[in-house]
Length: 250
Image (cartoon, rainbow, N blue to C red; front, side):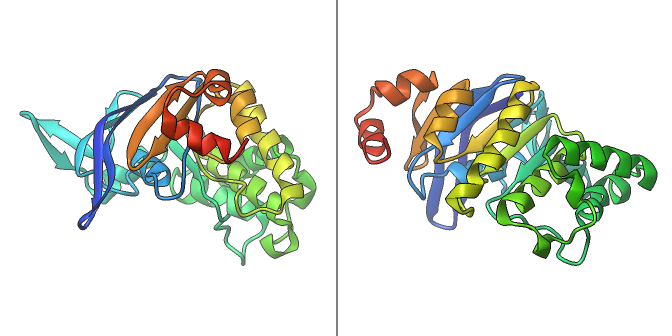
């Protein structure tokens, strides 16, 4: 589902990704861990072309993301074409980014109606199903300010699912939450994993990574230092840098 081949990303003179190669199979959950500034979130943003790569290739479901190739050269897609690719990729951020002046259900149906051309009735029916899935049907007519942080994040997940994506990206979805609210969000993500959704998750929740991930990827300094079975890496990391990082968390 995701194939990254020697991906580089610079911000001016700052090299953030230094040749990241990674594959995530369909239906797999990959968790990215590592210290702040290691490139995890930047990599995630490159996957749906919120950031442009400087070198290398990123493919989602076989499609080159953000570019088309012609005669061995890459040409950047137009914003409209890139937006069309992005429809298949749901993304959930640290902060919920819900429209404060719209109800929960209106937040969820906005993209299906305005972007995908779905009827409001059909989109609303699907939105209510998604609210059932995240345990918030009773909050359909509430406004974001009336919800807890954990509830807002579950609405954000429902909103991302409303476009029926083939891939879900999560950028530290629980890091802005009070500790007692984290469990409900992780439970929704466990359900998505059980349903076979392909997910790439930047997280510091090692228990979730151990339980749910098929692949654990430790990044540091813009490179993949170690990757493989989560239980093996968490219990017996091979690289000295991984050992040092995990010793501070576990």
